[in-house]
Image (cartoon, rainbow, N blue to C red; front, side, top):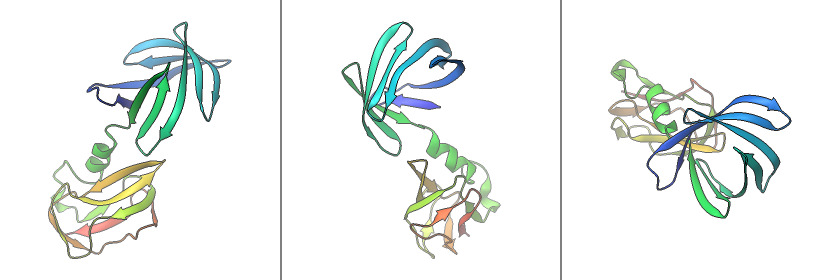
Length: 170
């Protein structure tokens, strides 16, 4: 999973490589292995030992794609899923030669938070059609081509499954 610290251009990838049991893990951050031992974890934060150094992280706020935390008394904002919008756009027909594709489909399951278009609207490739909330993250679904909105299939507050048609664009 990709993470990005606010105001720092470079993102980093972190994942669990091995669960050693007893709250001990081998994790990989940007292709380097680290030893992690979780001492205490609850809704307020986490205490852990990373490469034989003690750290304490306190959760301040968690929104759709950001987490505000304090690690060792240093406030940090993490942007999670930094490429999520691009992935959804690409897989909903954008970024390719998808001009023949009439239907804009959802690539993720989620709840329709907002709709930015109406039937008959003219839109350009890349314009936001709607915003979906999935796994506490809000993702903008963008038009996969230029055209006119025909047959909008979603309503605010409704849920969509992966592959459901959001709108037809001619």
